[in-house]
Length: 126
Image 1 (tube, helix red, strand yellow):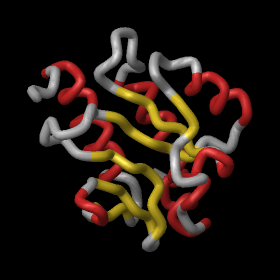
Image 2 (cartoon, helix red, strand yellow):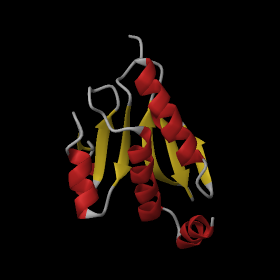
Image 3 (cartoon, helix red, strand yellow):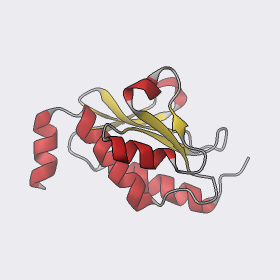
């Protein structure tokens, strides 16, 4: 299954942004791409090989932002009980999917919710 070029481009922008945050590392548990801060996942990026639809999953603790993210086409609370903790899965291949800029804002919020205070302080200084 081919990945739509525009969705892949947005995914690559989000991945690059996430990995550019202070102390961010990329790992591949369960065969999917995640970005971590201090060994804690702040964004699940899934896989980009076409075996599953492209999506990003972020932790959104602000009620308004969380509600807004859920209005994205196909968006849903994340599985495995993560949805109860504010995690939202946002598909990128749906028509009307959020642009990378908005996704990056959500990735930053997720980072701020998960990363240690010292790394958040570093981000605020940048």
